[in-house]
Amino acid sequence: MLPPIAVLSLLGVALLLVAASIKRIPEGHVYTLRRLGRPARTLTSGTHVVLPLVERVAHKISLSGHALQLDERVALNDGGAPTALRGKVYWQVLEPDRADAVIERADELIRARTLNALREAENPAAEDGRARNARLKQALNAALRERGVLVTRVDVDLAA
Image (cartoon, rainbow, N blue to C red; front, side, top):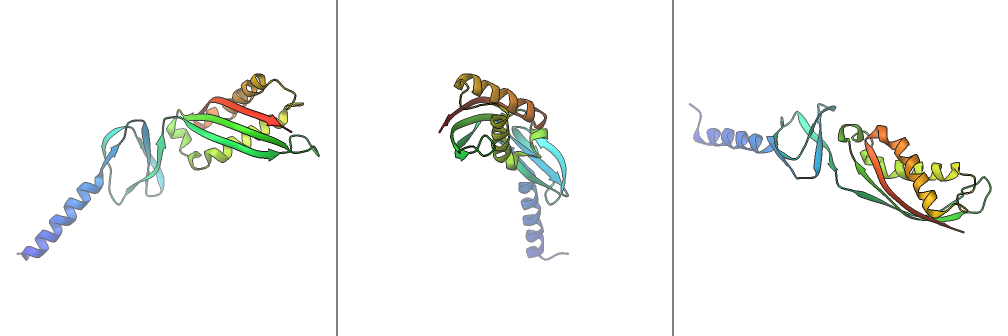
């Protein structure tokens, strides 16, 4: 027979494992799980049971909108003078399974794609602001849709 302290210790460890296996996902969020370092599954809002010590939460992804603030000087043409780029790019995650691979660097990815799309235009500073923002939004969505990310609005200004 086990001593009472050992029984209490085993019971305490069992209760800790049960408590660690229950995950409550808030509304508007998705958690991605890794099982032994590999992608396992995606948990939507609600209460879920996970395997403690085997599965771990890799990313907590918010499905509500995000905003990327742009405030930098960029050279849009080869050898051209730097132009001030200010504004915001609003985006959200539509497909968490696809976005899981890029969610940690999503802001960097969107910033780089925005600069590339600006440089593709002949003279982006002379372009109408609304037309430029619509073109940027379309270019960003074409590049990011396969990653599970949708750009909902682009509001950027260029100034010399």
